[in-house]
Amino acid sequence: FSCHKTEKVQVYDLKVESLVNPLGLEQKQPRLSWKLHSEERGVHQQAYRIIVSSSEEKLKENVGDLWDSGRIPSSETVLIP
Image 1 (cartoon, helix red, strand yellow):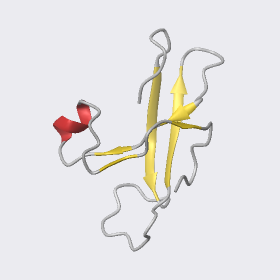
Image 2: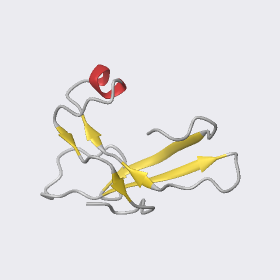
Image 3: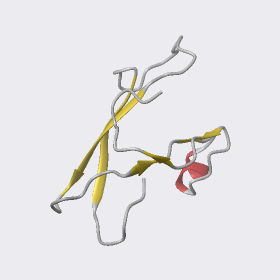
Image 4: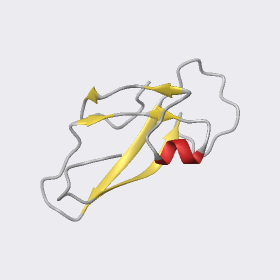
């Protein structure tokens, strides 16, 4: 997750199909949810990007070698397919 340099935003409560760390999903398009927190007033999500990586190292480098949604302009954070 990235945001404007001056904004400090935390993404938390990550879920897939309303579950934390699920193992073995049967859905072909699992739905993702997350929450945002910022100490600054007026900070909100304008877009999101979801990446799936084969390693934690690639994830830290923002490399979605398994899947990359690209930038999606949306303020939605609940049950995103």
